Length: 244
Image 1 (tube, rainbow, N blue to C red):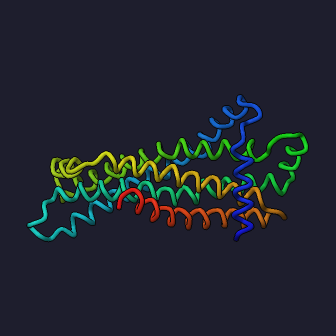
Image 2 (tube, rainbow, N blue to C red; image 1 turned 90 degrees about the vertical axis):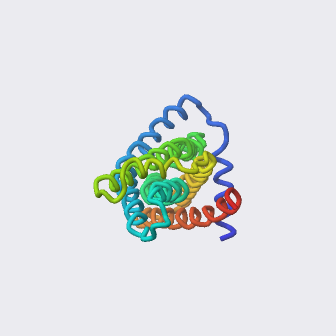
Image 3 (cartoon, one colour; image 1 turned 30 degrees about the horizontal axis):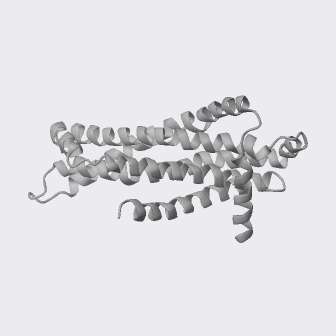
């Protein structure tokens, strides 16, 4: 474990060096925006809408006391989605989709000796391959999480209004009740940290493998597992630091 930590930090040292050619970096960055961010919008949208609907309906059906106003449905849906569901659960989903893609892509280049060819040509392979992926995920993931928040709350509204358990006015009043802008900052700050974990850990798993195609599959699995575990751990740490 100590050796892995050392190798990881040494790799990050190579990753965050100044790019040899800025024009190549910016071009690759926009390519990664599409492959790691835009292509994930579909699954994020579907999951967010339905999970928002489930949270809202479960909250509404569990309010069986006349002392609890129905505005709590919108309030609870907003808090659950903004504070935990969108930044954490969606990041775990992205760890599976984006993390496995990064690990398998870099791992394939490692086992086919493409990385060795880059190093022979004098190219900083870690910076050239990993740095655009890390920066792209850290920049695009807050946008994806913001979309998830909106769609999750919208899904809750749609479910409540279509089922008739809560009126539109009551749900919107609950959403607006006791809103603190700091919760948005907290959620997006967590998202940036989680994005770095997903991209850097997955890249390390792919970059450090040796062997053949079977090892690429193992590296992808390790990338998802390790990223998910670190996200859960850092979620607790960041919550203690930023909210408690």
